[in-house]
Image (tube, rainbow, N blue to C red; front, side):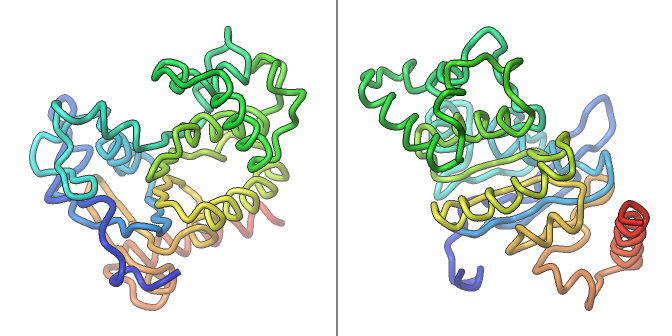
Length: 256
């Protein structure tokens, strides 16, 4: 992975703000996401990280500022076309329970008029990539394990071969052992595909594992961004050190 300053930005957040019921979920946030890198958004609950992800994918519109994807601002006129270049994964997978895994994966491709042969070939390719069992494709979500459902969600997000992958706590609801296995598999997939990834997590160790760049948020504002080591060695303010120590203590308690 080349240094991020040598990569053109896939996303640019320019002084972005978003308010709900008079409360600022995101307040004047600016940062770039380098193409081909993995950027992790992290911070306490309610800090604005999931709101930022929804702004990037165009599910929300900023009250102020601009979200740019590639060379273009995301607008009402282009958001549908731009979303076809983005894969989006949410925490519980967001699968349609009345559709089989195969139909969940292929839904958008079928909607866009892909041929049956093309859909089948792409589904089989993604099944191999994500190590999803072929005999699971014709099962319904309730018949799959949590890890299998997340693989289906990932396959669906990758179906159209998007430029970027946006993931909101994709492993947060999983058993720790399954989560550890999927972490390694996900990182291998990211490296194999070379795609731009933006991931939300509340787990600092997971952020370190995946992130080329870490964006730490608090109360809707960006506190610090950079490689993981900068949070530990060069904290921008006292909160950064407190956050790192609290995460380390929580992890030590969980491992005890």
